[in-house]
Image (tube, rainbow, N blue to C red):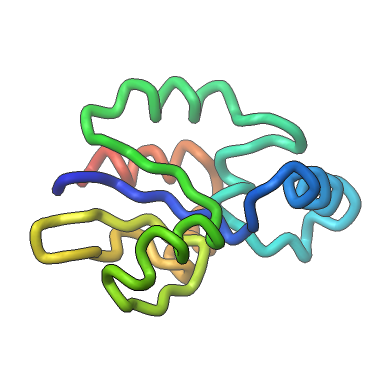
Length: 118
C-alpha cells in the first residue's frame, strides 16, 4: 500500500465547510458524510482522531469529493460513492472502507480499530 486516501462526501471551500458544519448542528440525522461525522465535531477535528492520523505509519491524503475527482477520476476512471477510504497501490485504487461499511461504524474508536487492523 503506497497511500491511504480518505474522501469526504463534501465539497471543498470555506462556504461549503460552514454549510456542512451548520447542517451537522441543525439536522444531524440527514447529514450525508459518515466519515465527517466520525472524525469531526461540529466545527473541528476530534482530538483523538487527529492524534491517530498523525501517528499513522502510512502516507495519507484527505480530500473532499470535488478534490478527489479532479485528482483521480481521469487517472483511474472509477466511479465511487462517497465517503470512502481507499488504498493506492501499484495496481490502482482499492476500497478499504466503502460508503456502506462506513455507515455501519458507530463511532470514531471503531473506525480507528478497523484502520489499525489493515
